Length: 167
Length: 180
Image 1 (tube, each protein chain N blue to C red):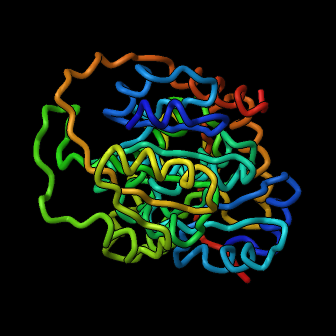
Image 2 (image 1 turned 30 degrees about the horizontal axis):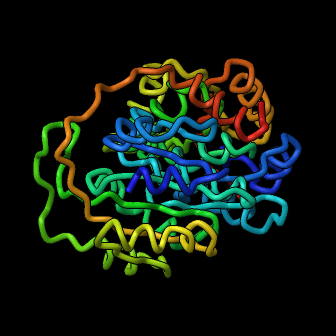
């Protein structure tokens, strides 16, 4: 697997009407981050840490925008209180694209296993957040599916990407 | 200080957190008041930044404490980077975690220097109520963003925490903004 195309992913994000992206790039999302920066109709904000980013995205949504949050699984772990307080608790329907650091190595049998790998999906389940996996272009429909779930439930929803994005 | 702000305030959003959530309702009851208590430790101004970016026509005022700022110092850098002119952050500097009993904060941290070093251009320290009253009309109208450090003390007992529903607070604010 090589991941999803950044250009096709941006097209999906635009089609779904996202106005802003709050993104702290990681190694797997860097091509998507750049493609978003090159997209004039989408504003990209890069905070210094992920909890800050979720609060910023919540403010954007409360103000009438439609933000998407892109963060690594390590950032999701850092952002727990913000996710609780600015997403789950107040029923703010944020869609999170979460990079699954450690997944490719674990699938390839590389040792040692990245300690971020095994906790990612259990953590998302612990938050009781619906999620789907995005591993290639074939899975791009899950972004719209989870965006609809977030809006339908008024709660955050998650798309986990395992192999990052190609240029 | 809060009474002066409430008297001058018109259609600005006012976001409060921690101690300010207990004191602000004593002087203000407004559809655009937003109680951020328990929404995420240290993130009131991050939320305010997002709201200010989303609503450029609307002034957004954040009342937060120095303890909260220390929980998310990086937010100063993000505020300096995106710099919406309609954002006013009032830092209530009491050098303690007042809500939890007044435990002391780092005594030497220079919040004015931190904000300036983070790239925020309009940083000021206002030392007393009289000066705050004089400067407030300018702060409410001049393009920012502004980061204002207000050394404060409080000798009065704090009112009890009002546990209101988080989702209803959001709906109320969006209704006040004409979005619900």
